[in-house]
Length: 109
Image (cartoon, rainbow, N blue to C red; front, top):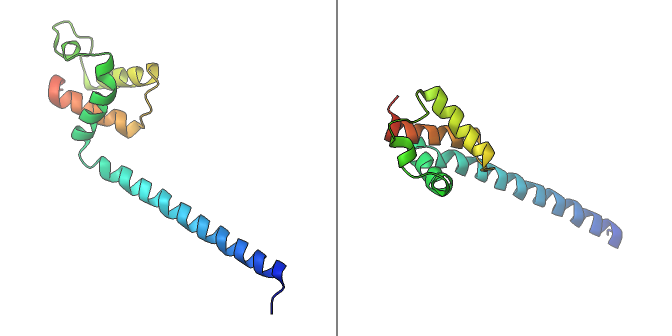
């Protein structure tokens, strides 16, 4: 028969293992969910754009005659500048999706 201190150590060890396993499973689910969200980059980019970019921009900035963006590379750099200047919490994949959305809808490079 185990002493009380041995039983509590065993329970603590089992609890720690279970907690670690649950945390790992949650992390894996988050990673899988994140990948699933960007299966359609244009739709993902559109949603990110609606959530963050319309705070500063209307559609006019993309359709005006004297727009600054003249290439896909310039568009990508501008999206990153806006992201960093506004502290938008995007991953590179999010910014790339916004670039794809803007190019598909407005620029057509």
